[in-house]
Length: 125
Image (tube, rainbow, N blue to C red; front, top):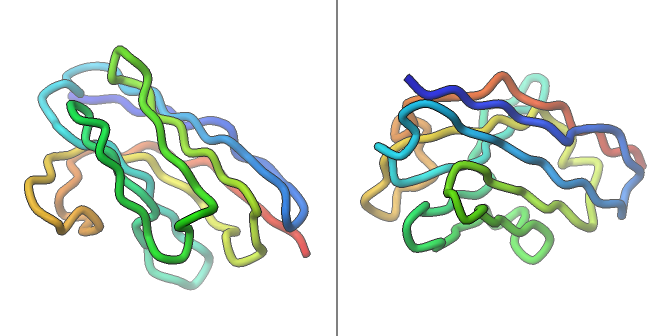
């Protein structure tokens, strides 16, 4: 089992920044990837970013490239999503996920086995 706990969400004005954190416990080391997804009301869940735990390689959705960065602590169990230049369209519940990704299909939610409870991000204009 893997447990994921997200934190860092909140409300900011457009142009502001937030840093989300996700800490994993349990058998997270059996999986090579950690990722962030988000879901806005009435919309489908979408992938935001992912990182390969061993190599630190990152991938981002086009909608957040250049604004969001992803980093991993040395223990490999905590991932940070730094979100800058936030826009109202970034408003969503953000979820952390752990899974195995061995190809370019990092954005597919089927690759992730465990999910956190989510943390809300609200960006006002």
